[in-house]
Length: 75
Ligand SMILES: [Zn+2]
Image: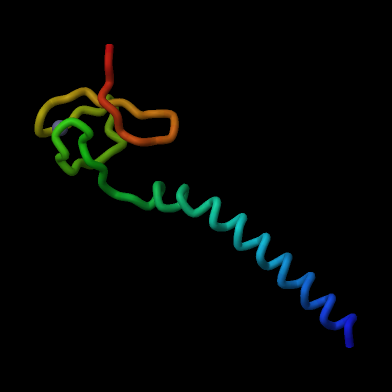
């Protein structure tokens, strides 16, 4: 009887670890599936991925931070 409980506990632990791993990957999926982004300068919604990035409303030149967010390009 206790052996079954032990196996169950191990199965639950493995499932728990798996869920934790999936949760860590979730933000990447959300970022990849997002269709539109906001201009950090004026808040205008815009289609990303056209390079060089420039806001269609205020004309601000935009870049990407290392974690993938839109930022105002300074140069
Ligand atoms: Zn803008």
